[in-house]
Image (cartoon, rainbow, N blue to C red; front, side):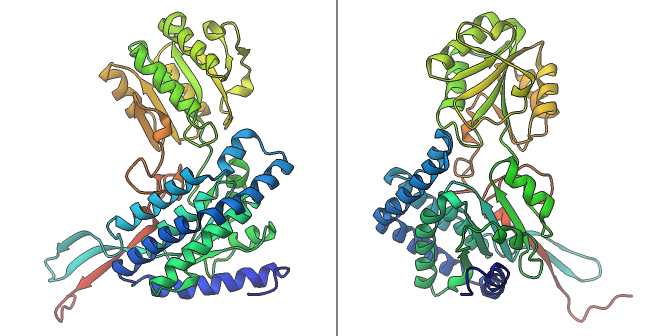
Length: 420
């Protein structure tokens, strides 16, 4: 490895190694990739004490840096979270291999047989912030889809990511796959990010996973195509036909289960007809659960904070939620179109026509009916893990699993066929 002080040379070496590894991974058997992921899962569990010890260093770093409680929660690893990471690796391992899947096949009058089949993208650069489990998720999904990956974790998760990455490399070695298939940038220097964004000779796509600042930087500076993962400005619209018991339970879960994830609810929109009943009950329940509610209109009951224009379109990633009445579903839709981030939005209603209108007229990557927005997660979608939730409209959208990390090519067969 090159001198860590020479960032351009360091990143060029990582890129060259990844490119070489990607060529072998492109035709690696499903069995070898499965074996690598199972061995990596075993290594993570066997080394859980080392991972927790490494995480303790990161938590100290985060405290010194003044991270918010929600960000510290994102950073923290314990045995249960490590077990979830292991389960995610195993789930990805057991999924069908997407590489080589025939997406379509047809015959032409000319005598040609044409098949469109999945193929790896090549080399993926993943840039993420404080969540160290992304190291395992991204490494596993890129491997499963036949891609080499260069991981650049956040400075806060430097030690945890390193410990997890070492386990992934153990898995690669055990399956006799190139160990440079999954590489971790070995420095906190931000110059490494700038290099990664412009490595067009080596990197085929960049996936940023983090807040607005990170994604904005990547979109401004990247010379490599980007799968954008924007903020999770998640709305729940409570319709006049919402079931009260379901709604209170779902809203509490959507906000309080984990406040620092991108699927956490950030804004509550309540139909004016139920503001004084169900709306007030929901706000009271949120306050009782320790949530700071920034409310306006009839939702501004005792204990709330007056909402301002700064509360709309804001991702708190904390135990805070904005709340406002709306005249009806169309005003809710307009609010979401104006302030949303096309990530995840939910309607609570027992009226099928209202649900259909909400689903039809909004274009968020994920739309939900009567379900907690905390389900906006690749694992909960049956993907085992996700590399992020893409909010753009090109190529990948919503949870990005292994299949979304592929492109396709056409295999055309003839028999001495010539064109007239």
